[in-house]
Amino acid sequence: MKNVTDSFISLSSAEGFGLNTNILETNIINLSVVLGVLIYFGKGVLSNLLDNRKQKISSTIQSSEELCKGAANQLEQARARLREVERRVREIRVNGYSQIQQEKNDLINVASINLKQLENLKNETIHLEQERVIELVQKQISYQAVQRALGTLNSRLNSELHLRTIEHNIDLLLAMKNITD
Image (cartoon, rainbow, N blue to C red; front, top):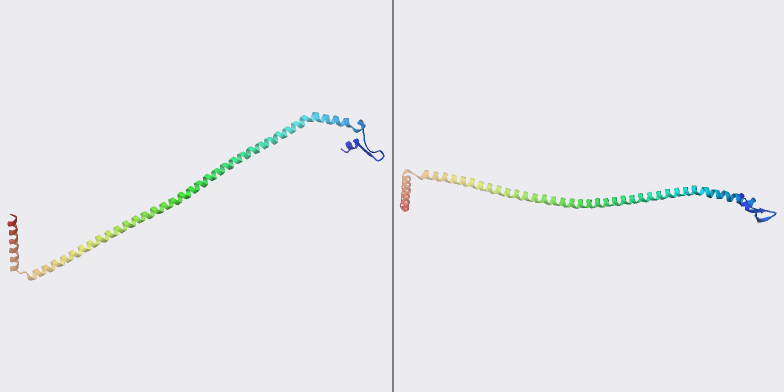
């Protein structure tokens, strides 16, 4: 490159600063020919290289955009699934709490019913036991009263009194028979 610059501009101390106008010395023709050949033959190669590079860049950008769109779609799907899962979790929590509360209320109601049934059964048992005891006491009192009465009758009843009682009862029966006829 230095030769090219030196060939156009001459900086000698004797001549001073100047421009070399000799075409053959400056190699302008040689440079023009080389540049022309390079442009003519290299244009297709360079154009192909640039087109290939452009296509690679374009396909890379396009595939990157497709990957980005795919990732965005996957992200949106993941967000939608997350929203659905969060909704289901809230629903399960609400249903779980309400179901627990319902089961708690059901257990309380069943326990209350069982308690009432046990209370009623206890009261019935107490009542039946009281009636049984009262009946037993009445039987014992009746038995004792009959025993006392028999003891009193046996001690006071003699054969004459016994005959009078029998006759009196016969008279009562006859009187009742006459009334019914």
